[in-house]
Amino acid sequence: LINQFSTVTDNKNFYSIQVSYPQIKGMNLSITGKNINKNIETFLQTQTKAFMHQVINNNKTEHFPNMNSNSNTLSISNTITATTPKILSIRFQLSSYYSHAAHPSTTYVSLNFDPSTGNLIPLASLFKPNSDYLNVFANISRLQLIKKLYPNLKNPDPKNYPIKWIYQGTMPDTKNYLVWNIYNNQLVLTFQEYQVASYVFGQQTIMIPLDELATIAKSGGLIDVKL
Image (cartoon, rainbow, N blue to C red; front, side):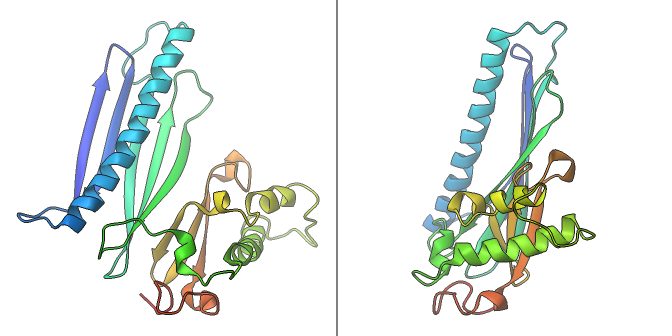
């Protein structure tokens, strides 16, 4: 894997984009490698096009005096959290700023590849059918987040804020657990800004040792044994 860099500056539309992303390189690149590269490139194209479209729309509807290419920015960086025969796990950080916004915004996206095929690994495929893994995630996430964010809060009531915020953002729903990675024999779950707490707390992550998921892991699957 080699980290690639790309920069785009558009002085006419007042934006700049900086991207860092991994690519598999080699003289005789396999179909698997090509598939992984294509998936990453498609993801990046989707994100950058959406950003450019939003900027251009903003420029049409608002008046921005003294604009320059740094008025709207998008920066995409990546962290490779695991590279084993069973998984290539990557987390992308997308930091964007639109002119006159109160503050930048950061979102996270994970791409987890099967190195034998180059295909993306669905989270559900890690667990036994009907294992209710999302409910397991919810229970573990709530305990960790409450302890981390509000260590001095006694008898936290899930009906009241800010604990209610945590419960809502960790509901056993697939959309709440889209950002997952494998790191050092742990399952890492990333929550977006505002998902489980106010902006001042930023994004939150929790780590679940794979051993704790052994009873619901699919037999012979990705997390059935330590990576």
